[in-house]
Each structure stands twice: as C-alpha cells, then as structure tokens.
Image (tube, rainbow, N blue to C red; front, side):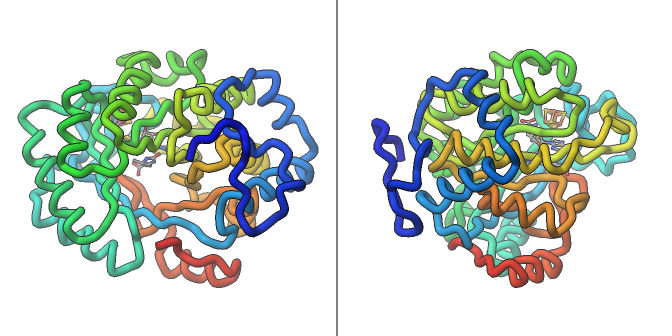
Length: 334
Ligand code: SAM
Ligand code: DTB
Ligand code: SF4
C-alpha cells in the first residue's frame, strides 16, 4: 500500500525502531550505495526491522511456475536456454493445451501454492494466441488460485484484455541496469521493458518485476537496477531476485560466480527500498546452501518458487523445501 511517508507499522516491532521504512520514489544511486556499503550485520538488522514492520517474518508466499510454451524464442537474452540463437539441448514445445495447464495448476494448488505463474518463450504476445491465454487465466482463476503470466512485451490494449480476463500479476523483469542491458540483450531496449510495465500498471494488474544477479554485472549495476524498480511510479508488488542459472550453450555459461553474501546484501537492500513489496528468492536456489537461503529470508525475502521445475531447469525438490521451512519455522502464506 502506498502512503505519504508514514510507515504503517505492524505488530512485530515498535515504530521507533523503524528508521527508513518509508515508501519513496526518489532514491539516488548514492543513497542506495550507502545502504549497500553498511556492515553486513547493520544492513541485515535494518532490513529485518523493516521486514517485521510490514510482514509476518515467518511467512513465505509460494508460487509455482509452468512453462506453457518452451523454446525457439526470437530474443537473444544471453542467460536464457530458450533463445533460438543458442544451442542448449532444449525440448522445444508449442503452446500447451488448456487441460494440461489446468492439471498442473491443480497439482500446484494441492501442494500448497497460492499463485500459479505461467511463462511463455515469446518476444511478445501475438494476437493469434490471445484467446488461448485468456482461457488459461479463466480456468486457473476458477481453481481459486492467483494467476501470473509472463509472455514478453504487451501492447496497452493487450494489458487491458488480460486484466479483463482476471489476471492478477504480470511478470516482466528489468533484469539488470540500463547501462549493462545492452551487454546481455540486443534484441530489445530497456525502454521496451519500461513501456510494457507502464501498460500493465495502467491496466491495474499487479506488477512482478525484478532481475538476475551473477551475470558479470558490477555492484553499480545492482544499485541501478534497484533504483529503476524503486523509482517506478508505484513499487512492483512482487520483486523476483534471480541468481543466474548457468546454462550450457548460452553466452553467460561460465560467468564468474557472484559472492553469495553480495546476493544476500542485494535482497536486503531491495527489502529496505520496497518495504511493502514481496521479494522473491527466485531462480538459482538449486545452487544455494540452506544457510544462504536462511540469510535471504532474514534479509527480507518472503516468496519462493516451489515445485521441482522452474521453466526449463530444476528447482529444489518440494520435500527439501518442506524440510527447510520446518527447520526455519517458516510457514506458507495463504
Ligand atoms: N519471454 C518472457 C520474457 O523474457 O519476459 C517471459 C519468460 S522469461 C524466461 C522470464 C524471466 O526469467 C526473464 O526475464 C529472466 O529474468 C528469467 N530467467 C530466464 N532465464 C534465466 C536464467 N538462466 N537464470 C535466471 N533467471 C532467468
Ligand atoms: C522470474 O523472475 N524467474 C522465473 C519467472 N520469473 C518466470 C524464471 C526463472 C527461469 C530460470 C531458468 C529456467 O528454468 O529456464
Ligand atoms: Fe525469450 Fe524470455 Fe528467454 Fe529472453 S528470457 S530469450 S525473451 S524466453
């Protein structure tokens, strides 16, 4: 919820403990850098205080992901297994039939997911696919789940159509800084991404937008990505922070690994900047230790993808996540 600077303080800490939990849209890079540059303990303490003011610190939102159209994407995103330009040994699949999508959503619901996220390897939504997408949104919603779609670029009109179909969230990541973007993707511009986000916002669909860390970007790029997200006219309701899943055959395979503590720092800064947003510990958990994930939750992450698969790569097994939740005393947010 937006407000004019007075943080709506929850029951977990007193208002006097909250120093920076204010919804702002005018962050400078220098101010964000100062958050990053604090000692690790100071940063995490601040993030945890803010987290507790806005959320139940032991609740994590659970989303399950399904690839509804896999591979042969016209874009050249250097991280992605699904670009037609890279030889990644992928099982390409056309748009999935409705009944298979519904079966997968039912299973996700049975397993405890509250949101079903459907992803397509498209540069943009084509008119010929609109009816099938609308049918998927309607069917998944009728199961009592929140719906999320990620279909590439949208027009203003398409955003309105998806809203009318009942779409709850649209995922469209800014992925990195404006400065580094051209090193990662050349087939579209940062402004293209911002335009789609503005159409989604205008249609009053919740925005899910974040980025990928570990692509060889510098801290300056992580700062600039977060600055873009926080200075949008409204903070994204959901902010996925992905750790690059390195995929053989893509240009970013073999990229230098990011210091896990720098990943945790970025989660903490995202939490401080966007206090009321749900921050998702997104792709890349397969390569994270339980301890690193625990630090991310402490830093303010409060959502995960749950289920054995992401889009084209593995996610931790559900039994492993259940164990982790139990060890940490975390419960699923319904
Ligand atoms: N084609 C649409 C698009 O790019 O917006 C939707 C699907 S695309 C796979 C959704 C997001 O997945 C990307 O924006 C990126 O943030 C994330 N992603 C893709 N490949 C990834 C990888 N190897 N590691 C981490 N995140 C990845
Ligand atoms: C997001 O930020 N991460 C998800 C979802 N939004 C669509 C995708 C992760 C993809 C990881 C690599 C793969 O499985 O292909
Ligand atoms: Fe296509 Fe999306 Fe992959 Fe880029 S990230 S290649 S747009 S599926």
